[in-house]
Image: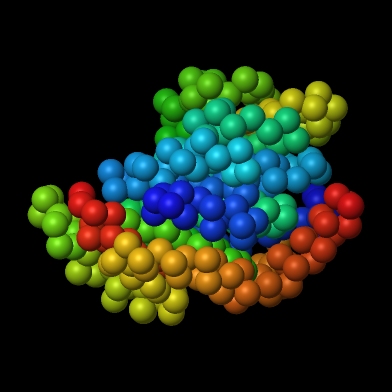
Length: 156
Length: 165
């Protein structure tokens, strides 16, 4: 599990926009950005994939945790767990480096994407279900300020 | 200077370097100018809430963002405005074509026009309405105001301002 750190930016709501925020961030500064998204969230904001494909930021990785279900709302099934392949959709949208992997290979695949210095979309297939974690109680302005301060330090 | 040139020149003067757009016929001219402007990264969005996500990222990455869209987008983006832009206190100038006002040929556009200002007021979004061509002279001050207060700010631009639909 990833520990809390000042380079984490937490979305407290606004389902669907993690990939858009990550792309905007990657296009605007030098540090590497990994957006961790879910299959349900990508389905909510499908328009993001063509935008990503056509605005290449080689410091951007989109890691889609594809468990075929809406995990935060009670594990209702998504279409990504049925006939729809997010890997095929991302490829059809024009994304160049799309990698599908199983959960047990995720660390290695993410590391390879980081090392490649190429924008990469990773679709990590896994089983549905949540680890017990607390709700994030940090104030959004604190999350944002801590993140921007750290980012600005690293970019200077 | 044309209205379109003035808008782009004010964006550049205020260091707005990242602009996302969802098209509208009234905005076609200004979108063309933004696309041609070397000082601005123009990233078209497929939907306005996606655009607001891009702008949030750009802002955190150190670039001043702006979004250009139609007023129908207010109906699409309320959740994003409230839970992202306002909740995290991020600035976002929103240059909005105010469809459904005098001169509008498409009746359906009036249906959203009648809700536009009420929704913006309900969201406590500072709102400016450009009706005459000279109103564009306030754009520079509105941009400065937006980045001073870290809020989304709406600039509604109607058909009279654009000299027709």
